[in-house]
Image (tube, rainbow over all chains, first blue to last red; front, side, top):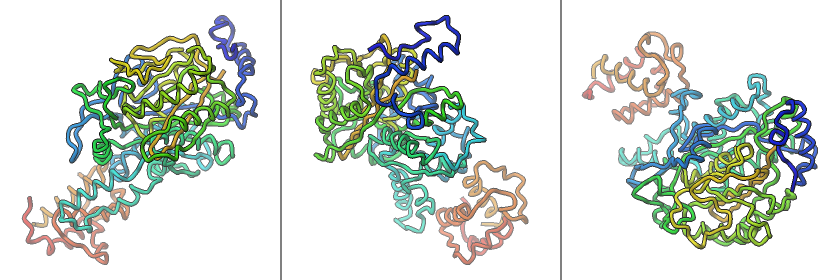
Length: 450
Length: 86
């Protein structure tokens, strides 16, 4: 495969305009199906806004991932007590009044931060964007648990008198809340809704945005996922009852996918939203393009409430590759979903082995994991984990999976990048896995835009 | 509670409901809406906080009495007379 070599690397002395033309010519050499589509059916990412337990913008987040810096800390929550969590610390008042923060939800605040940051970094002339043509598509694992738990706790202090139940409860817990708060804050009058897809939701939000742009239901999509999950004790208690809540003397070591001594999930909050546009629109405004969406797939295990099914996961990965006209050998980085549970990590590596290791790929594909740094950001995970890998298109470095002191042999995947980042010759394709309970699998394939 | 204590309690509730507002120049005779960005959900918050903090019940037909600080204090005086300020 010779397609897609960066002209900047090959011809460093050429002028910007000539480089652009060379890049355009070389992009035609990409063999995937997306390259053959008309520009108004090709969808590109032109901005990203995020908050993660280890960074509040792409640059800081990427730096933390390359430096091996964890964002997991000790955490205490009502009823459950001491545990660990990935906690975000961003300047929420930059974009939202204290009054609106009090009235809304943490998921709404995370969404507003991410959306505003994404718009600010997209180069769009936001004042003059037609807000009726902007769509908001936000992936969520769950929503409303935080507020319901808070209200039940509140009435418990009043002998369960429901007359002190807050009138804010309904607008806070409707399933569209995080997307609706973004719309309110930014004056967006196009469609807004959330996509409930368990921990596959971050990818699902992006996929929804791609589909709506291709259908011309909107001209600009704000898409990705958010999570406020660390503020509900129920999620911690449920994982604990399931034997799937991580614990470690050192919180930064608690999230350890693929390690022999992993003992569960670290719950985290976070958000990551992308600005998606049709390529024709992005070109018209000379936008900086972070990546192009090549293809995607969502399927269902239909076998268990909780336990994943590696055959269905492998089918989902293959479906995304087939739709994109991309072979496993062409994929440079796979961002794994692995959460740090014994069976889940085994099942995913089994699925990846089926797709990538029997294909004669010669070990070119590299595999990494972001949850080892930040925990499981639930509805944001798919979008956030992809974002941390996007700079690889430019710096050609694959960030690692940290905290692997003793690799579990069952997870020993050829190409797994452990503990230290790895430099690659080039990065053209990144495949992003995100799976969830009730057997939902989502895969997103993106390509360096050249 | 005295009128002054009731006034302080309402100010405390307002500072929770409208944390971005400067309440130092609030004029008691002018309506809250003229001076603060309050909507119907905020007024419900005042009702709710009085219920939670002091078990004071305000029927819906009386909500109009909460238009300004002076009308609120006048309305609440007989209801909160026997409450001891914290």
